[in-house]
Image (cartoon, rainbow, N blue to C red; front, side):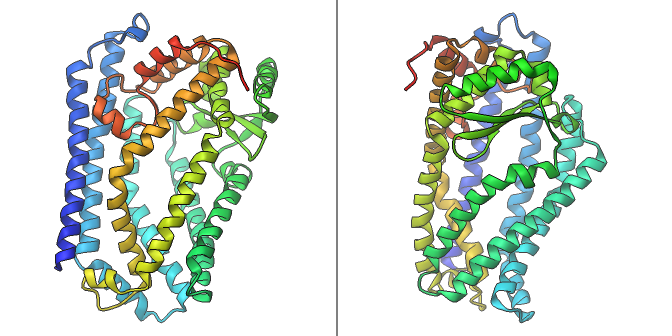
Length: 421
């Protein structure tokens, strides 16, 4: 094992141990405070529901430890145990054309990863989610979802990999620029077609039923305040897989389709649903998605150029003492190193995400004229989803993309409607 391999391995292990320490802090904090009913939830939950919430968090976290340990062992064996070198040599021995070799290289890795995840997904779905009353998925639905996901992933990988590797082969000196541009365009294209092509493969979308027509009119009027034109409001049969609730927008630009989970329609009243959608409209009005796309693309632009310069050398394969200077193996190693470098920046990303959530909450209050609907919806969502009401503050700052629910409700109750520009 080379010196650089040892350094990378130690860095990876330290990061893994740090994540485990954060999870330990979170569980210890929950164990200490889990019996306390936060003020916003007084009179709305009892000790039994609070215990169920804690049990759900503990069970998922403990299972997450096991899954993470398994994944980390597999990754260490693959990267540092010589399997990557063997795999790269085996793929090269097939004597495939460059583009096809790249597709096969990553397609097989994706398939192996998907099949290794099967036992964990099955246990999470049919054991943990069943135990706490969330799962409604049948074995048949799970199998069909798995097959569809594999096929879709293979198609997307073949398209993106095929075009990407063709660009690399056709333009050795400027492929970084053209690949970056292609991935940007293709990802935007996927955002546009996914609601019409991919999502209907998994769920049924139907126009909102007659009993909710007044809600549809209110949704249309509400979103018109921020310049969003609603084409249709659909309900999705989410209940065939889970009892969790959600709502979201689809569409690029000012024209949107509104998707409401049937579980959301069943559990929430009109004010609560309008509060949830007003929050989503706040994200659109504040251009949060656009800002995140711009930031990620700027970072991606810089990252792909640096990657291009590194890939021109044999430094990566030398680090891992590989005789085969495989371009595709170098991509795997580069991705691994990139994950190590990006990890310390995780809390920066979550900080801005939480900031965006607070801005969207303020917009929701301004749009509806009050915070009651969204507050009530969030309390229901927390109860129904058994959300952890007592995350460790440091864990929340590091990982949470949304403000912790108790803190968020307190902020919402202090917000006053503001003028909408």
